[in-house]
Image (cartoon, rainbow, N blue to C red; front, top):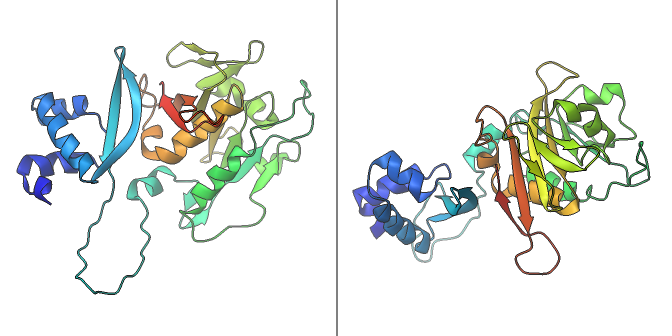
Length: 282
């Protein structure tokens, strides 16, 4: 508790309710950046803050940190233990309207594993929706109905009227295909590259993916959340970034904060062939 007893340490700690990098924090508080690094190192070593992703800034890698736990308790020696699970408060707000009043309030639409559509593609990235579903389920106390998913080949107009989560790009998921030209970040069907209307950049690596949230064109007041990658690794990176950094992902694109669309790149840090880390590119 020594680090938190310092007025400056406490101020820095409280400022990390949302992910921030030391450079931004120093400007916000009005102190030298080295002081922020000193306290940040102490907070991290004490287990009070945790890593919250990375972002390229003027050719250098800026690391973000956030508060690890939002509540503390002291337990006297010999007192009985009781486990209490607490939800990160920011997640509930950012997941609205997909989780509403403790209920799942969406349908996930994944691409069919069979050859389908103009390109006769098999959707190979649909299994990543399992991790996404498990994550979203932790914020709900129950289901609004079963099943909560559809294959794109099964989805009819009536199935598109609510909030939707689409997994897969426009070549493998025909529902994504129908709104591809409306997305701030979309796929060029000919080159299979990801194009950002926000930054005017093109992303062509297999590990590139994106997350976008838009208003539904099928029903007023409803939202659509899309996870897609150039290949399977890109889709996995997009979902991994969303699970680990929900609040930061939903803050909006750094080129336009009003646009809830982010581009990520996945990395296989331990060399086992599975994407286990990511970088938010924009």
